[in-house]
Length: 287
Image (tube, rainbow, N blue to C red; front, side, top):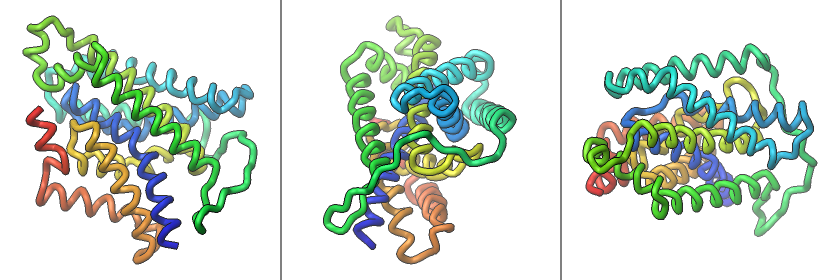
């Protein structure tokens, strides 16, 4: 059972990695914690469900539609909410993101109701390896997340957009002097973050049923992962997600599964008390 829980935790951690990375990108570039990550993940799940179930699109195409839909929603949120408040400070932007979260969640509830839904995918037998049960959905989640992480890492390290994003994150004023337009970088960051959250919504819909609270069920764990890794550190977000995923699943050995979110709360509390910068926060700040 311990081996099965550990494997499940790794998959859960990979699932958390994309939204945790999205959260840390927004914090790094725009300097506020985006509380709407869960709601945007929910929107991605429903967008893919509509394409897959209502219009018969394959899941890969539905995932692409979800990524584009949530990227567009992120751009609209930036256009009509965040850009107008950008000079008001991080607390104001955080509160604004709560409002955006409520709007997205209730739009999904209005159009789709509270019923649980699922994707139209073929049933398949799980694989057993060394006594560990591996579902096809878990394989899909792992492969998709690893590919996305490699692509995002390449974008941040080797492309002009990535260098511009890192420049704005390090020193927005100095980047502006060097000709980097913060507004354009903010828009492109929102598009990238929206695409990641859209894909995360599809993967979450594969992992469990889709309902208006699917994103909220991951919200605390996403924040715990990003804070544990050090907000603003992409590598830290991934490491934090894997740590939280394994810790939550392994906690089933000692506490009921309904209370596993206590682990995320405990991690956040411990970090705030003893290491507010997270595992890689101090390192990220020196770069």
